[in-house]
Length: 371
Image 1 (tube, rainbow, N blue to C red):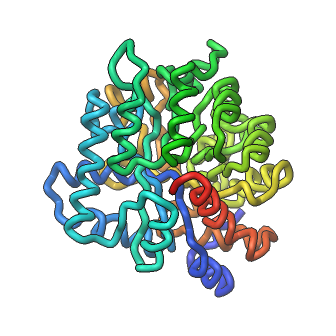
Image 2: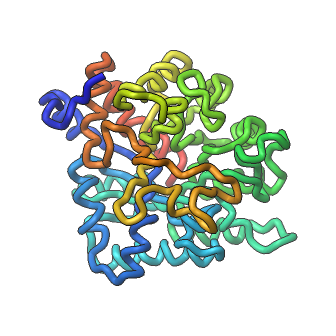
């Protein structure tokens, strides 16, 4: 399988990509952004992230500003403080005037995009920073982060929390706790997007049942195309279809091609399309979007090298450190996102289907959940 290269992107693909509102519902720029902040770098977003996003035609990102692991909470074990620090970084940059706008509703996203700004949604990857104090099931932290602008939460990461179990605890066969069910119900009431990535099967099904609103699985693959246990079973995919939710396709090889290290040819968006085809066959293309999960930044190389307390660990589980860039060979960076459009058109998806996968489906979801 040969690479297309940006020079191989057709005029049709370029035009369609430019006309689309492209949404990446799982972005990790804050891994590196926080390091720039600590070094006193000025104009961080406009210098290091806006150019790539603009070149890639990406209009909307949901970027993780906290969650379950120190690596997403400014490298501190005080997850609440670290999350507040990262929210503050972005708020201060926005106040100074930048090429982005932090958006708290679907309407604000549309206004920002129309003004030529990149729309940012604040997200958590894992809800541990919102657990509150021990032995008290209080939703005060959730509501407080909501008031600060947080709009989407991936309920679990790799391990067990007070809300539910992540895939690292699959052996326990436990589902959502009563606190977790209340947490989802309050997210629905407030107007927040519930993210079911990384859940055990039972936690996932419990969450689907608990949510009165459509949900997202922000960055994932499907087990039928890649038998990684993190990926979605057909039962989960069908549940998303019944719920009206959307599944975000990522560009991390781990969930796209099983034992990818043994594969001797380029791994590209054509491999992701195998996942897209399977979802489309089961529930239709209207439930597919983008959650690219890009983390190959120059200052940290990739997420696995930034994990705390030790590189390669996620919440106490050792996941290993890739020996190389674990992003797809094509596209390999956010500025190469137009290649996604080219690959899908070449595969036979219609202009309308491609436009909806690029962002139309996610925008529909956001309009139904975030107000």
